[in-house]
Amino acid sequence: MTQTPGPYGGYIGGITIPETSNTLSHPEGPEYSFTVGEGVYTLRESIQLATPPPHPSEPLHTNNSALTAAAPPQSPGTRLSLVQIKTRTPSPVALTTRGGVDDAGSRTSADTDENSSSGGGVIPRNNNNNNGDLVFGAGNASLSSASGKGAKQGNKKARGNLAKSNSTFVSRIAVCDGLQKRLGERDQEELMVFANINRAFNWLDMGSAAKQEPLSRILFTRAHPTCHDVNQLTRSTSHLDVVVGFPSGDIIWFDAITNKYARINKNGVINPHSVTAIHWLPNSETLFLVAHSDGSLIVYDKDKDDEPFLPSSSRPSSATSTPPTFFRVLKSVTHTPQKTNPISYYTLTPHSPTSLSFSPSGTHLAVTSEDMCLRLLHFPKERLTDVFTSYYGGLTCAAWSPDGKYIITGGQDDLVSIWSVEERRIVARCAGHHSWVTGVAWDPWAGEIGEGVYRFGSVGADQRLLLWDFSLGGLFVPKNSSSHGNTYTNPTHRNSISSTAPRSRSNTTSSLHPPHPHPPPPGLDDDLPLIHPVEERARCAVLPPIMSKEIDPDPLTQIVFREEGIVTACVAGHVRVWERPGKSEGGGRKR
Image 1 (cartoon, helix red, strand yellow):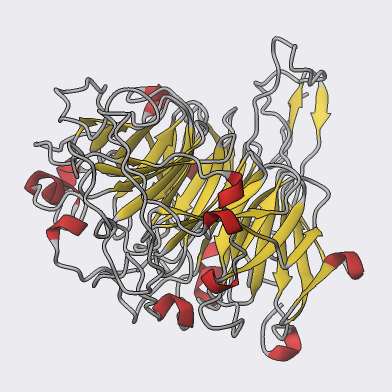
Image 2: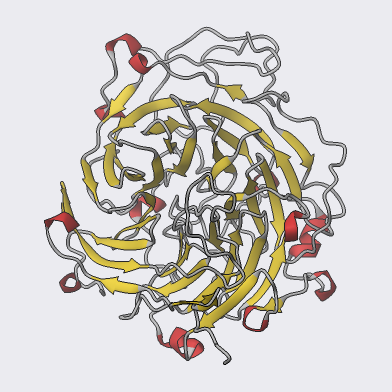
């Protein structure tokens, strides 16, 4: 008797594996709300993503012990990528220049995305800046001609269709009936979410009454997605570019609407290590940045074929080869010709990067890693500028403030840290979590919470959501830290440290490298990064949360702020929307 598995089911060793489907619920009660100064946030809806059964070719695991030789593959938990075809009016914070270091002529106020797809910050949809120094790959004619709109078809990477694929990497795709009609009739301002769980990748319409039913669902054979991102520049009613990373180092690009796809870095031909973070380059239609677990950062082009990578004679790096200043350019974006992937290749750290976050202008990149470091790079110049160190333990996540003045990070020290990019120092440590911090984000829609006050949030493995209000004037600074010093460490002269001097808290605009209060020590090259030692606990301001609540029975993985509320995700596949005060159905928002 022939047995045919269902859309998500299968048969393994004669055992029937049931089909699975997402579920939608609307829990009520005091445990599903929390209060802050502006009012009460309530849980509007909770989607439980269904964990798919193992692929029929995969052994059925009955023992999850770490000592088992054939242990199941590790899953990173659910991550979210958000997109709107049309954005609403940009938030006031996103359009107001507060004198941030990242503002200089690079922001367009008429067309600003509410969020990057991961929710980490606000990124301009278009960049009209003509300064070549602020555009990645500017001046490389072979790059622009090969990947721009005028590219020849002969340069295009061969693509398949997920619905007709016979790939051993992709198991199947299930698409909802009448997808094109449904997309044409929906409100283009409503949110869509891409979410992974186990080996499944869901595309959800959050504006639909049946939002738990995916527009499409991809099942991979044995691979579990680790990260993903949506291109906010190319989004349209007929085109959605998505990139997905995997533990094998493989990357899948696909168009969610047409289901065309391509497999990049197939079988690790360029880098065989796990993809830990992935991000489309701001204002690029084809280029995206990938962090691999061996500490490499690689720029790929979705339209180019791959070629085994052999490092060319590397350009002089901006650091030595010892941590934490380890940084080498193995292939520069200026290399010609640019016919195949990789477009550029950097080694940043011997340890695994954990997150990538571009500044609002797209010129600077913050990278967190397991080696306790936050690294800042001027990305178009391919230069490492600063290295900051956590209190202890690795850093797990980062996000830029909408004005580009501050970066927040979460770490394995259970702390959220606030860093001033303008003053190049830690501003405060935020204590309140009881386990690793797994996600941080700024809230540009917090409303009138005070002049010069920022709102941000964090989630952690302690299942808690914390909200914070931050202003320089509201910080408690320990008495013995009346002055904050500039510390310069030359990576090639590790003992070269300058004297200290008071810092200004001026809101005037400066560059990423503000004028030094005193000349740097002899031999300090401006092309070398500044290594900032750990600030003593007794000298650093401490910021308490304004709200702390356990909001999920499972460890949380991500937080995203939206105009209508807060979106959270957890390792077990809960996608929850917390509605802002006054944004209920009666207040004009759709459920």
